[in-house]
Image 1 (cartoon, helix red, strand yellow):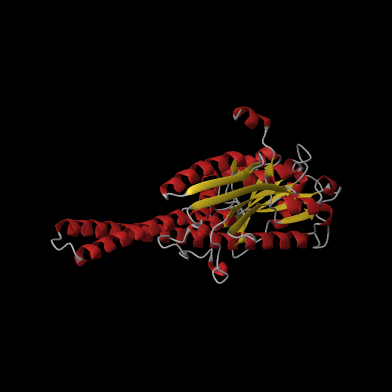
Image 2: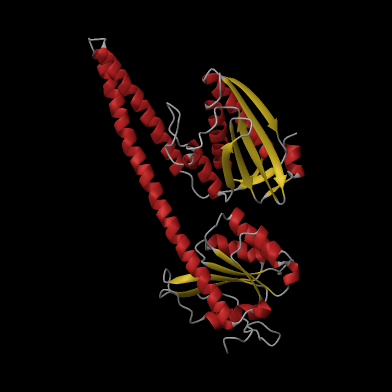
Length: 397
C-alpha cells in the first residue's frame, strides 16, 4: 500500500473483526475507532499496526455505534485519540459522541478526530466552531501518510496535556499541603495569644500587641482558606443550570453580606431565563466572588450591583457592574494576580478564583472600569446556552 493511496474507497474489503486486541497494559497509547463500517476498522488497524510514538505502540478499541462509543469512553477514560465517524445510527451520532466526551464524561484530554464520508451532514466550519474537536478529515482525502501524521500529532498533543495536567495536580497537592501546615501554625499562634491576653496584667501596650497578633492570625487564616478554595478548583463537571435561579441565589447571599457589613444593597437585574452548561459549585464561586467584590468596593455605604444577562450567537454571557471606587489604571494589569488587593482586610483571591473557574469552563472573563464609574466584569460563555427545557419550567413553576 502506497502512502498516497486513499484509505477508504468502494474497493476496500471487510476483514470482519469486531473486538479490540489490546497489547500489554501501560505500554501503549489507546486509540478508539468509532465507525459503523467494519472495513474502516480493519483498514485503520492494518495501516497503524506498526505505529509507535516515543517507544509505545497502539491499543485499538472499536465501537460501531454512538452508544458503544459512549460506553467505551467511560470504560477507557485514558483513551488518547478517538477516530470518530459522524453518520452512524443517525446523521448526528458522531457529533453527539463528541459532545458526550466533553460535556458528560468531562474528558478534556482525549483528542477527537472526526472522519466522515458525508461532509454535507457535518460541514467542517460549523463543526470546528461549535464542537471541541481537534481535527476534521474526509475519508476520501485520507491517505496512509496523512493518517500517520494526524494520529502522531494528536498523540503528541495528548501527551503534552497529560504533562500539564500532572503539573497542575502536583501544584494542587502542594497548595493543599501548604495550606494545611500554615493553618496548624495559625491555630497555635491564636491559641497562645488568647492565653497571653487573658493572663496579661499590664493592659497597656502588651494588650495592643496581643490583639495585633490575633488580628493578623485571623487574616492569615482567611488567606489560607482562599488559597485552599483556589486549589480545589478542578476540571468542571457541567450540568444544565438556570441562570436566573443562580442569580437569585446570589442576590440572597449578597443581601446577607451587605447586612453583615452594614451596607445598603441596591440590586438591579436584567435577567433572561437561559440555561447554561456549567459546574454548579464552581459557577456559584465565580458569582459570589464578583458580587462580593462589587459590595466591598461600594461608596458611602450604598452598594449598587447591576446584573445583565445576554445571548450572542450560540452562546450567552452576563455582566456584573457596580458604582464603587473603580480600579486605578496601574492596578488593572494585576487584578487577577493571587493576593493582589487594595482591601485593608482582604485576601486578594476573589478575582483569581473567578478567572480560574472561567478558564476551566473555557469562558472569557473581562474586567474594566465602567464609563459611568465603578467596575464592569463581563463573562462570555461561547457555547452550551439556550432556553430552559419545558421540564425545567414545570419543575420551577
